[in-house]
Length: 222
Image (cartoon, rainbow, N blue to C red):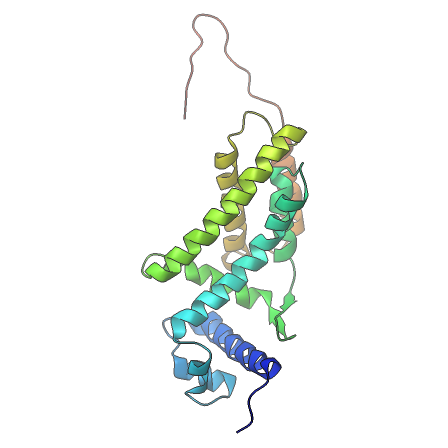
């Protein structure tokens, strides 16, 4: 039997991933079996196991693709500018969320909605699957470090208020990104450009609330 070429192998792997993504998006992780994926892909029942040891590996692959779509633009902006504001970091991700399709490694179009549905579903796996949780925490910590560093450099450039704690600020940026992703998938967020503009206006305000003066002033820490 002739050996399969690397290109053909990559195309078959992408075919299986695409089939799994459709199944997961439509029916959920736990209602989808490996035979279901094989049927959707139009391959034999054992073919998927030549590329993935189990369904968990496919879930991880698709979840990582989803979160790469969301966070890679943020990471790129964080790495290439010294004056990124929190709003600009969020906007970089929202630009990616506004697209309808992306191209996978095999050159096929991937519906972004389908991919993001799988990403949101993967959050529930954090509560029950230690492997998924470990990979997710590694990715989260890496993004947190990138954004934290970007905010520190932004403070030096005057784009980020000096009173902001960079690590807490990075968590706030991540919270906005996660919230926008959830709204995009589950709650009808379609005007991502409008949301990005509103976040710019909300976060762009530098007016601090008036401080109390005199001996009766109170200091409150939250």
